[in-house]
Length: 260
Image 1 (cartoon, rainbow, N blue to C red):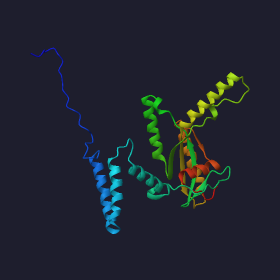
Image 2 (image 1 turned 135 degrees about the horizontal axis):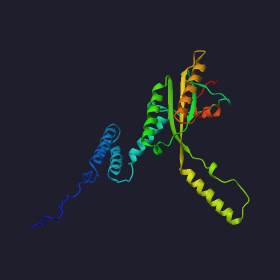
Image 3 (image 1 turned 90 degrees about the vertical axis):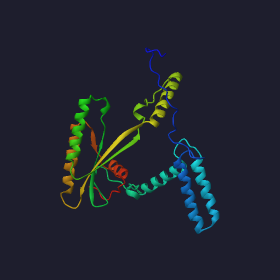
Image 4 (image 1 turned 180 degrees about the horizontal axis):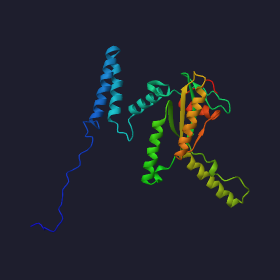
């Protein structure tokens, strides 16, 4: 008889593979991929030569059967072609600037294609993860109200930039041989760590029509109000001027025209 005090035993069935294989193909999707290559080759061979069907069959079989740890070759090729297309401005992507026109030092506004006058702020971040839940909710509510109060055109760009090691590298001084070796080792460690660490950089571009005579004054007022609102949230920000504004416009993919 079974001991009533013994814990129950549950027998689990054998695990079912998530992607069952289909013949020589790892999954049904890979088999369909091979059929797609074969169909494309059959269409091309029907118009040109039957021998052209063989390369399509070989490529489809290799792509469909060969196991890979990461994305397959055709997926990587499609991602690369899509990235190249978006880089040139296709499918709504942001075209890469072909030139880097410079804005004179001290200039804080620039006209971009489309008859839009643009000013820009660079904002820092807040370590929200270290805030108590009540403070984090309060900050999020204030930030949502800030976004809702913005009028006119506003663009936001968040990017990662190299951390930079200059603040962490000690100044060059005369040291003994042992101290110098220790300093060189520390500098090399800082450079290796800084190479793989990045900092967050947030650009806020505020724009408006450049046709009216008061456009510059209205845009300056909006930028000043945004700066004050960010400062009230505890987010440090600074106006971009001159070459810094040029770099920001290029980051957005805009080629500045005239500046003011």
